[in-house]
Image (cartoon, rainbow, N blue to C red; front, side):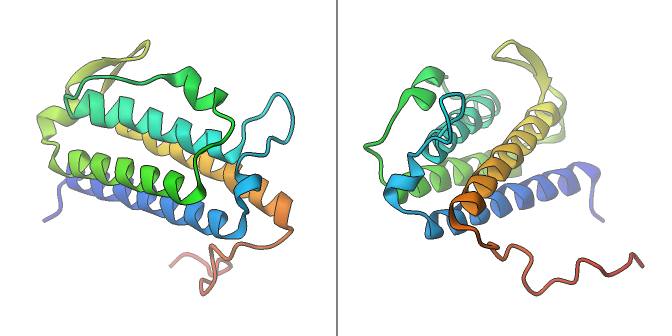
Length: 168
């Protein structure tokens, strides 16, 4: 019988893996230059967003839940203007997500309810995972929008699925 904590962690991991696949799909459509292009001065490039996701996931899950030292340099995630290839960004994101999934999968019920201080917040393990999944999805949406805008094409995320099918 599936426990609530196991169901929660499995669904969280599913969403994280789904977001990686979507970002990889976006990267397959974009040039190296487009990865670092900013839509305007108040927005971030796709490269900046991926660096930001890596920093956030590392700080919240790998550092806080995993018990590792916090070395995040948040401002650098946004000030970087290039010098990192698409493949390097995907490799970095994949490594961070894989490490965080390992931590999530081994989290006990007591670790999921234990409160920790992360940035300016007091969060349980569940709260940390919810934050990371929501934050990851939010920025994946931005990356998707920017890719669709630049390429004027459907990215096929739902190919083979009938999204008009009614609930049973």
